[in-house]
Image (tube, rainbow, N blue to C red; front, top):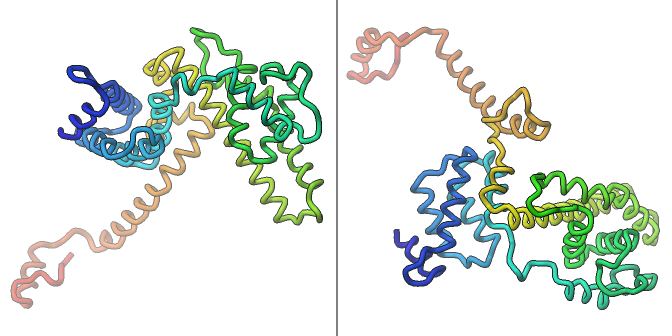
Length: 317
């Protein structure tokens, strides 16, 4: 219990409960509700682990909890969903500030946005950009792999296209769909590939084109994750951690309703069943091997063991 007191002492003042401990207790309770088998010992191990890492290192914090609370790889996805809800990045320092957007527009627009044109009329905040200008900024940021600009564009895209309203009982998937539909990232991939072909000194080989395409796909997937994270952060701030966790709670692969499973759930189910089929085949082979001779004849085995000094070296069936 020393880890509990250390953690409590590092995150609270005298006579007050630790907000982090309350959050961890709620997090572990939600994992159990999601179906993960988390024992009291593992909860204490998690507290011990996080007391030895810097709390501000979110990745280290996440994997310390995962290493102590997750025993099966098939449960990792459920763990990640609950973690992203309970420990989503939030606070005033992560809110979208107008000055931040203005600085991006003034300082980086000429370099990152067009690299060939002028700033939009009345150029000030990014909120004043037209949809075409925002698309152009997004295109240039994906082309150059500018993660800082992509993070800001993800936030601005959610503000502009998601249509989020406080208290509205709509899931994050709906907001994500609305945002991605307006960004039209499928056609963006084609534009990126055409730009790469034009910029290449020589014609791209099949391998080079495949590598370029994979790189752009990874950048687009990363952008989607940032948009999803921004939507989740806003929903958690609006609805609270517990309500959001209930909304996103998904059954484990072994608890999925087979008749109503989605394609992704069926794929997870197949991955979970594959090692079981191998174990079952090995067990059946072992049973077949020894089953032909019937059950062990204990009397004959003991009688035959006399020739080995009483050691049952040769079982009889």
